[in-house]
Image (tube, rainbow, N blue to C red; front, side, top):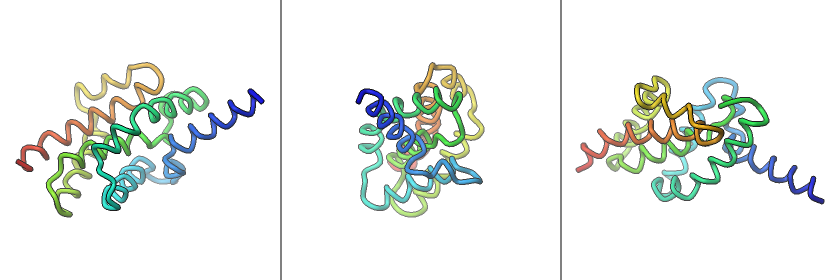
Length: 148
């Protein structure tokens, strides 16, 4: 019974961490995860609220998968989802703001300028998540300025 609970928890972590399978996309799984976040935002899910609600479960799920698969595996894309939602929360309304949020977040996520890269040093799921949270915040700053 206890083993079954651990298996269920592990499977749940993998579903969340890969964002329902987006992380298994063969080319650019992080970009696919970020696009899934944009699609959900357009479906009416407020991105700032969604990021806040999902953050701690995402840290847990990322930590489980990183432990089972190896540190920050590419299939973990829930971090991109959270980071993209943070950027979208500050974006001006309309497709132009959405596109700007997507491009800025992907830039900061891929390039990881200082101090964003430092967050990868955090242990477990925190390191997986926090560099993307920082990339989302870095993207949100210029978006918020244009959105005032």
